[in-house]
Length: 266
Image 1 (cartoon, rainbow, N blue to C red):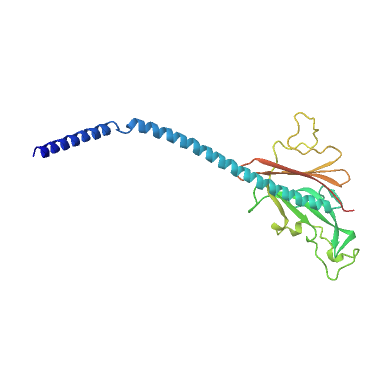
Image 2: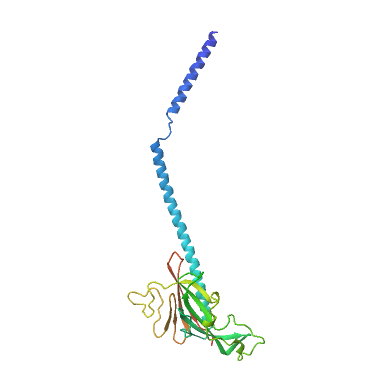
């Protein structure tokens, strides 16, 4: 009987001691105060805000770089197309044909007529490149357009004429009469005049230096305006081409591409 009483008493003492230990442990782990939570929240918010601003800036810069790359590629393709046609020509001059009101001529090419596997000795056709107001789907302010007084590619008549008898392919001299199909003559849009305006007669040592190009010292002929320019060398066998376009509708950064082409036909 005494042993049972002793064991009960011992168990009660152990329980009470264990309860006190647990209470003491709970009292020493009370958590964060409201002030500490507010400070931690403020710090975390600041870190996340700075990180967010950095990510947004990186995305915007990346988007601008992609837009610039695409835009420069489009301008380069347009200039390559024009340069390739210059190489097909026998001569390059400033435009002398009548263009629609508001159009500004830049280049006029005289190209030998090639048909039925032969190059005509006396037949040529004319190609004119000019700037015009953009409209419809084309981006402002200006577009580059192309006019040829014969269908391009040159059709093959049946039966094939001799190289000196190509009356079936006689070009029409009037560019205005065939201006209904706008898309047929389109080369590039979003072409704009650079700032400062080019001073083609300046020298490389001028003060201030001419910026941007082109340079076209005398006696060469400077032609064009509104973002598309050509320096036609004396003799009409070589031309420097300069093309300026804006980046996007919202970013008016001006991009420049340029090329030199030499005629190869005789």
